[in-house]
Length: 100
Image (tube, rainbow, N blue to C red):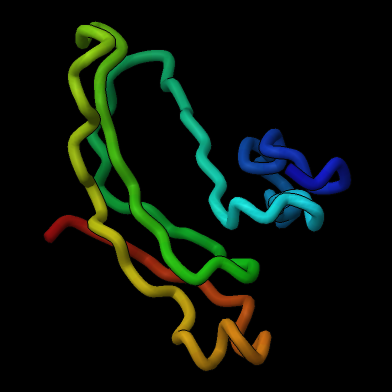
């Protein structure tokens, strides 16, 4: 991750600071695992994009065995077209996902 924009930014209630990958990292992939205090229904997820081309959201329970895979809540979706990604256009936006 970029030291200026760490994953903890995802937990800030008042700001809009992004979580970004380290510019020197060429893996082109970021992953975060959030654990809620208790089981909670998820009715919607809003994602602010900052240069991400694809997104997938998976969920699980801490009580599951370690070998049990997560379930897909939001299948892989495109946040930027290949052309936009290549040219660095439309890097910022919000996608909203709700039930269904």
